[in-house]
Image (cartoon, rainbow, N blue to C red; front, side):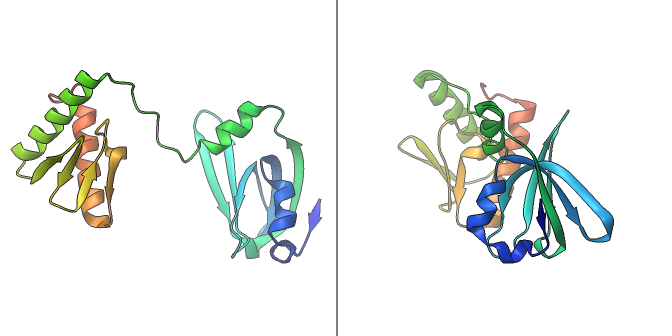
Length: 169
């Protein structure tokens, strides 16, 4: 068990706690249990992941950490793999070239019908000259340096994916 001084331990010592189930005691008698996914190197904040019916992520601020106790290490590669995949987007469906072309055309048509300027640039769609949608043309495949446009187009495509109005999945 690590007592006090968590922020002062530094990244090399924190590595010992990664991918292990831990109990973190914080101020006011709080106790948090989960798999330690990450430690912020600046603030010493701890990211804990709990697996249950749903995945729960909790951040314990570094200045509040009083003690960290290792309960157990990941027994298998499956736990470590699950921890690494917590923040990854869901896997894209495997579509053949014909299905990808149909999906690209459907997304392009849907955007045009909703008066959003879109052009094809090779295999990608370019929206309003500032956003790119790559295959398989879902909300997770959008890229832009303009966060406002990125968020809006991702939400629109996400809504379209959910309702599946004319888009082959």
